[in-house]
Image (cartoon, rainbow, N blue to C red; front, side, top):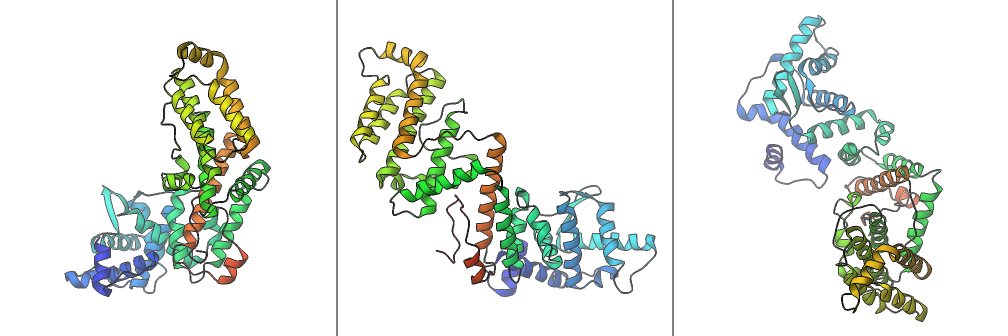
Length: 415
């Protein structure tokens, strides 16, 4: 908050680029903070220009962040400072004197602007992770170390560093291209995952919907994960499309009623998936409570514009379900739970595959699931970088189109 207030007081506005905001605010902080508070600093720190201070903090930020260190010992950070200031003009060469100077610099940094703080006796950290991420990105840009950054693409804690680096670069073409290549390489050699993505895209394109293609793809990816979770989760949940961990709740608006109610195919696929969910929940919990809802879902599906064969198939499946209105509902429910449940579930999935090209049992391994998660997150990160107000040439956008990303976000250049 202090940093933002200082920047607004100095310029009267905030830049659209977040990296530029941090750069300008930190520069102002390092340049004006002492003068405004009439504080006199130690001579060794006073000799450091604003540029040198930022370079020093960048070295500390990058070295610690790259090693996964958010807390570091005082002696460790003093060594980083000593390694930096010993190369400056008029620097002391005696190791003991240099260590004393490093201590003075550390204390001055802590007192001057609070970017480094002592969390416990002899234990330091950046006052906020954002500062460590910003200075890490600044060091990467200074070194042009794009290869190292791209190698961290599947590590979640590097996300903000990617976004800040993209915003800092004069031209982010190389970063975007290497990220795209890294994403392509993730699925190289995994034919089953590639086939799944091809199916997902073809399924979405087969649906005549006013919605953007990427939203329709997201809708079907949600349905796919719903069917996958049906086979694994042993707890009760409401029979509707749910948010999955990989979406972090961000896709809930993509499965609102207006999306699937405006299209027969999407409506059909939605209600069939919901019916399957209801039956599986009933089977898991040995209760007939959800069978009525499954019947209602199949009834809603039947109101779509269906072929006569599909209408008959759904009617047969509906009649096979226990229903509270049946005269012999109790016995029918017991029979279904004991001997007919797996046949019914398999039958509905076969209908979905035959008439809707949906409901396929892909049976991904744990490794394939993890790899797809990484692929999804990497695509999402690339799109977020493209939307971070970074500078990218039109030629690069044309040559390297934005890859499939279920998140539903597109580059501002393609909107």
